[in-house]
Amino acid sequence: MLNVEVYKVGPLETNCYLLQDMKTNKCAIVDPGGISSKLDKRIDQIGKENFEYILITHGHFDHIRKAEHYGKRTGARIAIGSKEKEFTKDRSLNLAERSSPKFFKEFEPDVLLEDGSTIKLGEIEVKVMHTPGHTIGGVVFLVDDMVFTGDTLMRGTIGNVGFKTGNMAEMLLSLRKLYSLKGDYIIYPGHGDVSNLNYEKQNNLYFRKASK
Ligand SMILES: [Zn+2]
Image 1 (cartoon, helix red, strand yellow):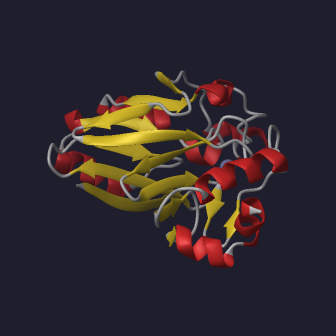
Image 2: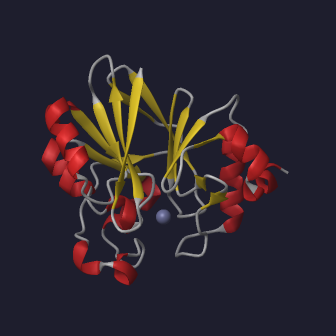
């Protein structure tokens, strides 16, 4: 069973998630865009040796800024979509230059994720789905009936497609893939409140448009 905790990090209140396999204690951190003292406490509690991955939904600075910090602190490997590799170095791509360049330090990811690949977290399987649109190599992470959507799909809305590598046509195709998931899913977005697939099907205009 997967335990999920959310920590709001950084000036843009990014949702940073702690994923923990309750059976084996193995953990991952999703989108550490900033430092959280509460998360730090939890890492010490759980034991840093149990942290296996830093999972990145996409390479914007508010999602990756402290990836290397938490990677080093725990020994976890940093995983990002293969088409997003340059975002960990390029301040123009990751938007750090227009936001807070002095707080961003470039880094090398350890694992490049492809569409359909899976990651093992203890006994839990994390599936990777490539969802370009907000950025070219953005991914979402699926675990059981949960999906960590980053800035692709958020409660009642979607991420901005106006940044470098953003593309509305690709976004609609990505939303369509999410729309086609069978059954309901809890949506853990990159910003804002938790949602679910059924709510979005009824209330999210972009999501509805993507299904047509
Ligand atoms: Zn973003």
